[in-house]
Amino acid sequence: MTPAHGSAEPVLQAIGAGRVYGRANAAVPALLDADLAFHRGEVCALRGRSGSGKTTLLNLLGLLDRPTSGRIVFLGKDTSGYSDRRLALTRRGALGYVLQDAGLIENMTAVDNVCLPGFYAGLSARRAREIALRALGDVGLADKAERRVGALSGGERMRVGLARALSLEPQLIIADEPTASLDAETAHAVIDRLARAAAGGACVIAASHDPIVLERATRTVALAHGRVVTPEPVA
Ligand SMILES: Nc1ncnc2c1ncn2[C@@H]1O[C@H](COP(=O)(O)OP(=O)(O)OP(=O)(O)O)[C@@H](O)[C@H]1O
Ligand SMILES: [Mg+2]
Image (cartoon, rainbow, N blue to C red; front, side, top):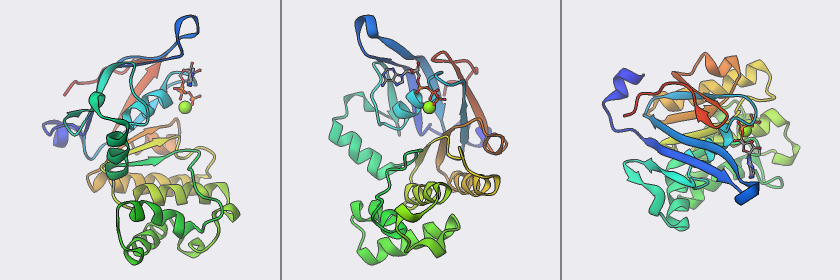
């Protein structure tokens, strides 16, 4: 994918980005000086041992947390100066998150959960539901749409979270171990859906060690002790 997209403006850049947790004696430098650029159409797999900084980096790239040094540039704009509100609006409008703790509302049905981004985006209830049902169909859950999320299996919940994250076709998709604890068939369904989003022009960044994800990645970035160890071309 890189050659086709190499000349285009990156969707996202980390420029000297670092994150230190805590202060003084208790300071933990979890990410150091990351320089990375991400483009449309990519599925980037982020690898590294436990504690190497993958989730820390994903949180910065996904505009969920702010770097303590350096900056994150999204769609050509430096987000350092963004207010919390502007960050929240940017997340809501352009990003999709596939996280382990999918943040689903247990007492609502699958389809109502998937409708939420549509409601936030101001769609009519009817249109939001139409989109949500299609998104659930895309992850093989059409028959579970009216089931309460609390009564779904772990893999089914993961796919509801995926449907919700992708339903409005976000430009940037952040996934943290999206296939962890899934059987191979479900893992394939998840990566197929992510790869389809990338083929449609999204940029997907996924922390994962799963060979099923790695074989579909268009690129790999490796972290060790908070540093990017894969040489990366700077856009
Ligand atoms: N909120 C926090 N406060 C202090 N230290 C933290 C915090 N979150 C993470 N860390 C530390 O930062 C380092 C990187 O953590 P991170 O969660 O980014 O690793 P990871 O690569 O995602 O690991 P895993 O594969 O286990 O999910 C670790 O040493 C971790 O203990
Ligand atoms: Mg992690």
